[in-house]
Image 1 (cartoon, rainbow, N blue to C red):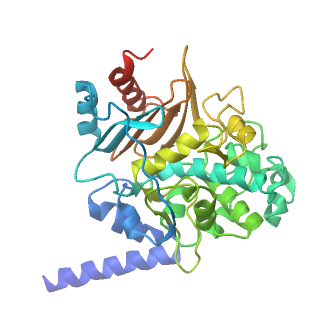
Image 2: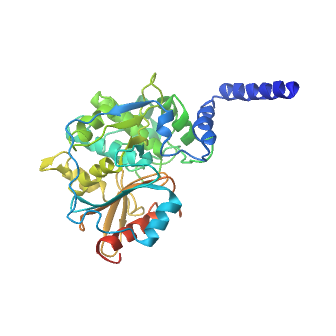
Image 3: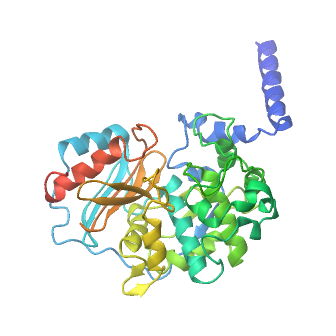
Length: 382
């Protein structure tokens, strides 16, 4: 038994050493935060395993309650879906008032959970704010103005607008379940800036949509250079405080030593504070009568940039049906804030899992959540 234990320890030591030698030691963090927790991918609670910076709030204001608050009940189909997919928060907001809210599995209205890629909408909004304040010239400003790595070849053609609309032509490959991808390295590694600046431009920028979290990360790095502020502080002063958020948020960073925010993901807060950003865009950048974000930028953000990719604008997912027009913040495992401006309805869901069908996040159960919410509010969804 002693021999076996010694040999096993030696094998583990060799494997760990190999990870460090091959610069893949970030996998140790993945093992700690995912596999040893019984998961196969990142979870909404794993922000507790990482370094974070605080997004501060100030004078908070609670959402008003609808006159029919919680007088409606979940449909049977919706209740079954919540249970099957581990929903932890579900809200329906009608006419800027909470019509329905419910929390599950020990979560409550103040519980934090990971936004995952809903954070991309915030970063796009911060680009709009930086343009509005004159820190960035416009969507067509070259990234090379901020990073010399983008001053030659195809890279010289990459603009900040390309980053916000996922059209940079980057070599980034989006993959959530393999331990050896750049997505995993970015999430678990401690040198995020180095990882991002190691990317290359492999296709013509500004031509077509290709979902790439690295685009959002680079955009956040541009915004920090342009404003001279850490992006978590810029989010606080630009949106978190003006939108009267009730709770502070946490934004994951690669390490306290490098202090680089994982801008493409990982804002931890609660459902009602996430919903505020949806309302801001629903009202074209205005909050309680004050123009927080340029209305023209908002209007452009929630329209497709490319005819061939009508599902994405600038940091927002889009869908049009015969009589409805939705835009949505969406994240891994089915975190979302979906907005239908003409109906003045928002639906918010946070949870542990999502059913996927293809590359359009509206496919699968997100559409079911919306349909069932509409049944609860005003009859069959069409």
